[in-house]
Length: 266
Image 1 (cartoon, rainbow, N blue to C red):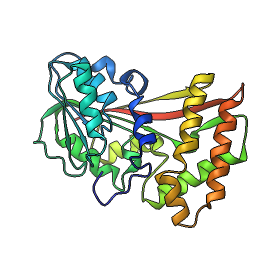
Image 2 (image 1 turned 90 degrees about the vertical axis):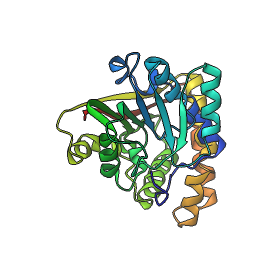
Image 3 (image 1 turned 135 degrees about the vertical axis):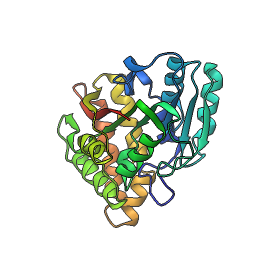
């Protein structure tokens, strides 16, 4: 991500905390079998660093660097690394112009990043540039249009329509998961292994986490952008928030979030 791009979610506390709950096991399982001690790894769009630190533990004593377009979540990332006693360098950098030299890393990773970029192919070319020949660029992104939930609720339909409209208004692609293979080919990768996996929220605890998070999150950056652009009113946001709370409280509530994944050889 570059300074001209708009991060649809923003970096409010509720957003950063939800990202900090992610782990390599939940979010990078497709990559873990390729990791071994001594590999050097770059995590592009590392956020609060929870996945980065897990990956660093898997490749220690290899060098690991996590980068973000803003310093806002990096204090939490550094604290997580200290708590886990894992060596990670965190820094501000630009996905379109990474400061690393060519052929620096064995693995370059990005989770939920390309969906927010106006030029994801350019970012993939940068990731390829800093990855040594034979190394791996690993990318995973959600596909919002493929989200599925039960029970049906027009307020959640409105949430999805609104989120996708805001993201598209930011010149971003919220349905990135289905585009990863094509973007990788356009970026010049010839050896690409595509896959898919899901997050599922269907227990009382996971429903409470996801539903409660979005009941609050709809009033943060994405909601403000929606109101400012005339896409929604405050009453619309309140209705969406209540929709998420009602879904979370439903004993049969179920939500699946599909993700596209690629392992691309540099």
